[in-house]
Image 1 (cartoon, rainbow, N blue to C red):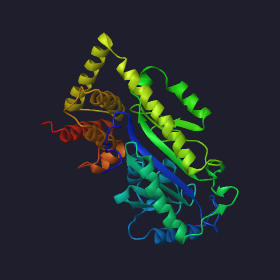
Image 2: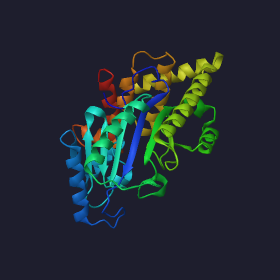
Image 3: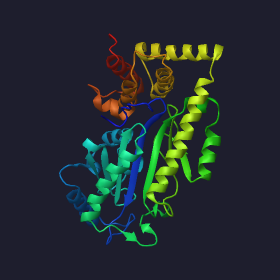
Image 4: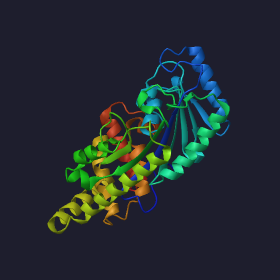
Length: 337
């Protein structure tokens, strides 16, 4: 099951959980001064350490469209997609694990799982980290912990995050204050694609901001407590919508379903708006003709690069891509063309 195909009791509020480790090898530069020869050597050593369970993709050889599709799938960062020189992606889809070789650090390994599954994601990520540590000389200092290109990743080098669906908090105008409160306890709130990205579909990524001075267990515990508090507040606000406000909300949700099923053109921006209403409708029990799993799968497959790659013919312009998006959605939902 893909990480975006959410199942379980938390699917009304939790999209996915992610653990990411930043690591570097001793004996090599950490920055852009790394030579092409050393870069290729590092990639080869990482591949040998990971073994045959991981499939290698030479990202430097990919077209811009294919690289952007990997960004849309949360497999690589935007910076990694546009990087020059040797860099590669290793994937183990059986455990939702991926490793970016030569992003900002030599190694950026991550595990993304559906729903609230931080502990399972942490366990799988640790298995991969242990495999790398057993075969590679990872840069580590007794006082500073794992040595990284950016000082904010020193220490554990771990970023733990949970992607949350928060339409009620967004509607109540509470996201700015929530973000401020989280910053006070060392957590940060970002958009769908992490640092520097805008929130789309009322999806917000909550993660630890500090890695130095806290253990991995402390980071996980703090994030879990914060996430549970946010979930409770979001659900409470949803229950407070009653009377005429609830009727208008239901009307908006059902209109969104009609547009999604029968529109002949849909932009990415409009899809995100429809996604928000429909996901809320599923959570409230107002929509039973579309599953959460189907909706979340669409969320990835209708994004521009991924949609273009999967199309029978590449769209000539934005209007044609919007028509292809609408047709793709109709087919996925079983609507006759």
